[in-house]
Length: 298
Ligand code: GLY
Image 1 (cartoon, protein in one colour):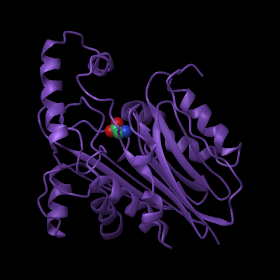
Image 2 (cartoon, rainbow, N blue to C red):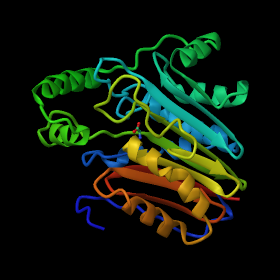
Image 3 (tube, protein in one colour):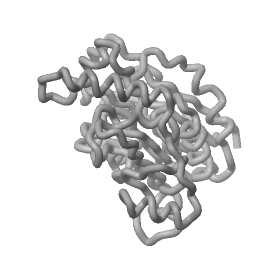
């Protein structure tokens, strides 16, 4: 595996007698101190797996350092559109391009639990949130506004038509930070699984662009064998249907090996995953990825 700058965090052990919550703060930032993540999983832990993963994602959505909820990146047109999803075996809920709400992951949970649908998008998602009492909230921060102005200036000067080339050039020149990307969590509590994810998207991007997070099987999958969530360049992850691929492979090899092989496929494109099965947990990324884990014997 050729990525020289990659940080690699893997963990594998037989842990079927333990409840576990595992969360990540996104792949991509070399600067992000791993301490940023400490304590999130423990604070989020509850005896209900869905509550646990949603709590973890809410904590990260409310922390302006993460690209989800407050602190979500601003799109090329100046708007903030966020995606989020939750899943338990047989159930899924997500929101696409939701705007002006504080916690997209809570709205995604309401889509799953209170509607016959799996996905609500755009104005429909916002309208649904308002009817349920979610107030108006501006997720922009001083940091994201300043990054946005720099990005717009830099994009005006670019002539290349390759989005990823532009993106890499902007990072290389210090115009924008490497994105922290999606936040996510998976849990196995008393043998039951849940997964949750949330993101402002992968900057720079057009208004209306959708990544992997709200698409079942792409950035998230949860079934009777386990739970998987992804982070990274959403287009690449979605084309690969990454989380469902990994889920389907659970129990065919060590979870650690499955994650490594699946991430190696992405080459230079940033990607990371966390996963739990009945007796294993693992995380793997091809860029630095802050993670936190809380385990308790049962
Ligand atoms: N992984 C987040 C996105 O690409 O939108």
